[in-house]
Image (cartoon, rainbow, N blue to C red; front, side):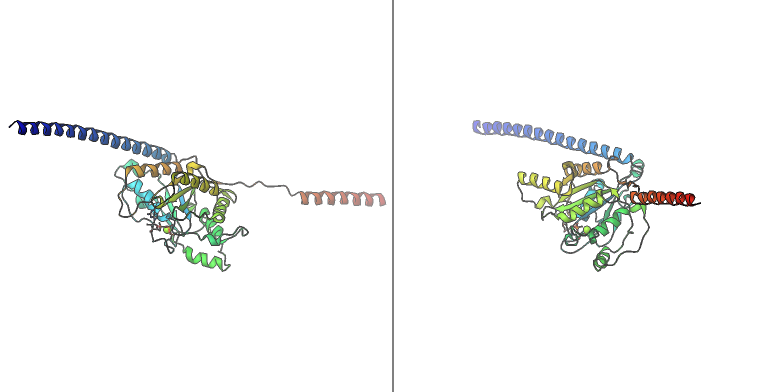
Length: 327
Ligand SMILES: Nc1nc2c(ncn2[C@@H]2O[C@H](COP(=O)(O)OP(=O)(O)OP(=O)(O)O)[C@@H](O)[C@H]2O)c(=O)[nH]1
Ligand SMILES: [Mg+2]
C-alpha cells in the first residue's frame, strides 16, 4: 500500500512538473506568434503607406539569366501578398526557356481582398520576360541583343505577349524592329536583377549592360537584386557575406537592395517569417523615393558653326568695305 501510494505521489509530482513546463512553452509560443504577427502588421502598414503615396502602381521588371527563378520570385512575392500560392507566372525546370514572351501581371490579376479600401491599393505589376543569354552581351557592342531587348522593354515599346524568343533570334541575324510607339502602361519603374545561389558565376558583361540601361542611357531607374535558391546554398556564413558584397559591387547597388531568398514552391505553405522578409523588400521597392526618371540631356552650343559664322561675317564686312572704297 505504502509503495503504491509513493508511486502515485511521484507520478502526480511529475505530472504537475510536466504540465507547468508545457504551459510555459505554450506561453513562449504564444508570445512568439504574437510578436511575428505584430511584425507582419508593421510591414503591411509600411507597404500600405508607400503604395498609397503613389499616383499609380509601379511596374517591376525582372531581369536575369535562364532559370534563375524570375517567374518563381513573382509567384513568391504574390503569395506573400495574398497568402495563397498560384502559378501567376509560368515556372519551368530551369533547363530550357520557360518564359518566352513579355508577360505583365497587373494588380487586378492577383489582388482581390474582401476589404473595399484595400482593393484600391496601388500594388505593383510584375513584368516577366525571357531569360537573357549572357553570351549575347558584349563589352564592345553598344547594341547587343540583350541591350536592345532591355531598352525596348524598359521604355514600354514592346507589347504584351510579344514573342521574345523569336525576337532574340531575329536580332541575332541583324534584323531591327520598326519604330514603335511608347505604351506608358508598360514603362518600367523598378528593375530587379535575379541570380541563383545554385550558380554563382557573375555574368559581368550582362550586369554592365543592365547598369547602362538603368543609369546611363535615357533613363535613371532604381535597381534591386534577388539571390534565389538559398535553400540549395552550401556556403558558410562568411562566404555568403563575401558573395553578397561581390554581387552588390558587380551590379553597383547598396547592400540593402539585395535580398537573399528561397522561392516558395507549389507544395509549400507560406510562413509569416518568410512573408515578412519578402513584404519588407516589396515595401522598399514601392517607396515613392525610388522612382524612374527620364534624363534630360543638356543641349550644347555648336561652337564649330559659331566660329564659321563669325568668320563668314568678318569676310563679308571686309568685302563690303572694299566695295565701298572702290566706289
Ligand atoms: N529549391 C528552389 N528552387 C527554385 C527556386 N527558385 C526557382 N526554383 C526552381 O528553379 C526552376 C526555374 O525557375 P523559374 O522560375 O522558371 O526560372 P526563370 O528564371 O523564370 O526561368 P526562364 O523563364 O526559363 O528564364 C523551377 O524548377 C523552380 O521551381 C528556389 O529559390 N529554390
Ligand atoms: Mg520565367
